[in-house]
Image (cartoon, rainbow, N blue to C red; front, side, top):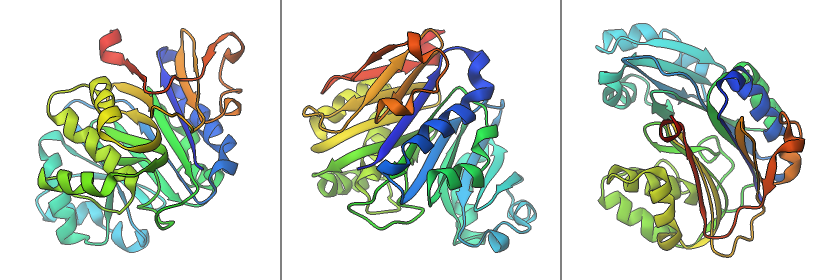
Length: 301
């Protein structure tokens, strides 16, 4: 049992409130998963720039003089530290170099996510503590997803927490359990995708990354997941401009959605949505089994 939430803003005037709204939604789901928590926030992109969210168990060592050491390794960057995480801003053309450089100069650092707009923060602990540690309430953005975990199949670690990100500006949170993740992992490794954990959710994220690399949009990739992924699952997924939801054909994991002219919201339970603006006038529904729900800022523009 885990708790997942998501918020996709149609009205840009709500963007300064994204962190506040998403934090309240996640904290409400604490009793569905007190082991660890995480959030992905899609903020504004800067032309020509990309960012990488990194994590360290020893931030006082790994983040000290990191800007200087990156520059000396030939990778100019700006580093903004937030507790055990840091956001490394680099020229977009150098994004592919970040992983190799960090492996050479900071081998214990782990990459949480990368892209033009996404920042991912996750740690062991209660949602309220994770939210406070990374000052999530002050963050703004166009959309975000979150997860509070009750571990069932892998260790309670930072890397085992959700969201999982395996592609640029892509991430996924999951409530459920996949039964064919080992076979699918082997297939994806043959396609060149690497994995950090044994968590089945990372396999689901990598599957979507691989499908979107073939030219599919998020909605098409989620449709394919219904045929290719076995098990019980509810997914909430984010891309740079998109937000998607899908449940398996049995749909035994709880889910509820709300939509107004200003936003689309997802929660494992309705109580995660009750503090959203104008929720009393929202269209409320339970997402159907084996049905993809997909919104995209670019397609709406």
